[in-house]
Amino acid sequence: MHPSLTPHPAKDRYPDVARSVDHVRLPQPPLILIGGGGHAQVVLSAALAACVHVAGFVDDNDQPPLATKRGLARLGPLRDFTPSPAHACILALGDLASRRVL
Image (cartoon, rainbow, N blue to C red; front, side, top):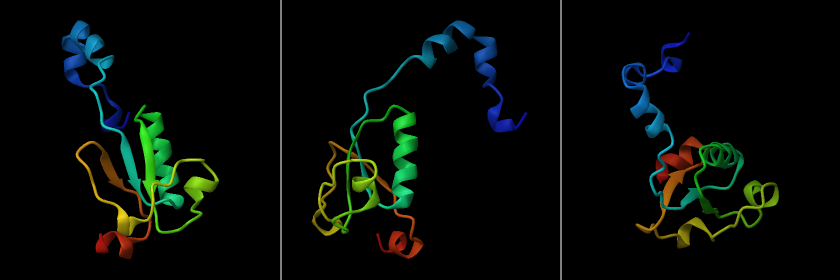
């Protein structure tokens, strides 16, 4: 078994605590994706699989794949976006040059 897939040792030593911790969900701010292309679709899938609420995304493209294929709300262009403490943001741009600029 790959080391990253092995159970945490505390789960074996304290099964009752581990069982209760597995079901705890801390409140999370809604997530905003920075980008709406192909890489953002992968990031969206991962966020949804982790039960994270995704509020929408920002992208300069008027019809990015995330809106046309997945139906997620485009919150506007990147140049108009101002991060807020009420939201978590994740950089979901696949283009390395664009990521470096941001």
